[in-house]
Length: 397
Image (cartoon, rainbow, N blue to C red; front, side, top):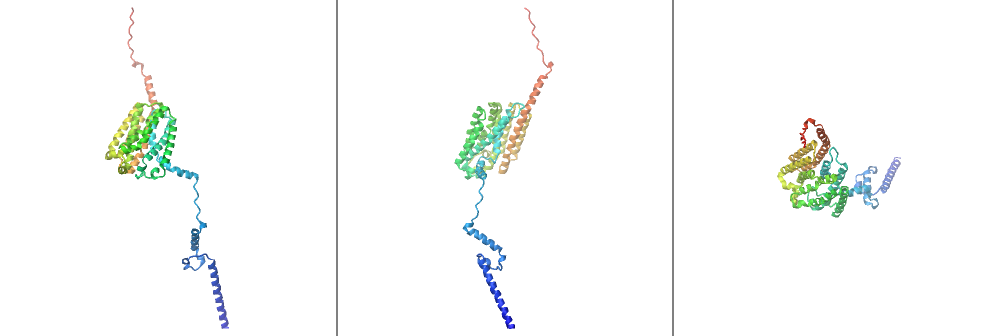
């Protein structure tokens, strides 16, 4: 009995071991091929989710039919914006300070030419604002075409579209043609005197970038070009230029440009020295503050003369005083060896233009009240103040 029972137990144990081995073999055959180094130390299949992930990743990288899906194509609007971005950078649309500085002399002249007690011509301000945006962009394109090789050597400008190769020279010329066409379209909205006067400034715009190669005074030529609107604005509203008012205003604008662009040029003076480019920043050197103080005094003198020629009132002269204080603060707090401070002072000149414009507008509006006071004072002069002249007696013949 004992022997029979022992034999049965041995047969059951053998059956179980045989069945387990067969089952394990069956499962192993159904498994995907797994590298042997992965299975070392693994006891149960249900504890291998990591291995399944590795197998899936491996099959995706090795199978030609399971290539990664292509990226979703960008929309036409996104493609258009991406293509237009270098051109927007070329015309400095992201840096509007140049447009403001070109516009303010035009706005000063338009506001000064307004009749007593009247607001400046809003249509003219809109046309000149549009023209300033277009022509400033055209000037930047011309400048970058001339300075493509120089810009590539200057840290601040080496990523400009032409210098970095984002735009070809031919594409930039085509773009410049479009800009000048739009500028001409704005110009022909004015009277014929203004058309001739405006077209005559194009020579300054084209030659300015070359001046830094031949003279230490390129800022003077820039001032002559940037403040042409001081003459053009009056001509556009009145049909002619009043030199008594416009010439001092124009010269004041030129002095102002020399001030702010000299500050701007101090950012690049080290690169300019290495390349051989000239500027008033290099010409003035450590005496920059003395020179800028002189140009500020000349600017304020010109603005005062222009106000006297236009019979301006107290708000105008108050604005001139505030402008003077603003420029004095700029100059005497300026650190010419700190590019960040130079940039900050340069950008603040937008406020100078705005302050003077508001002063002109308020001063012109106040002219009507002063004229009324003068007229009323003449009308209310007492009769006793008049002395009657003795009459010559008639002689009887």
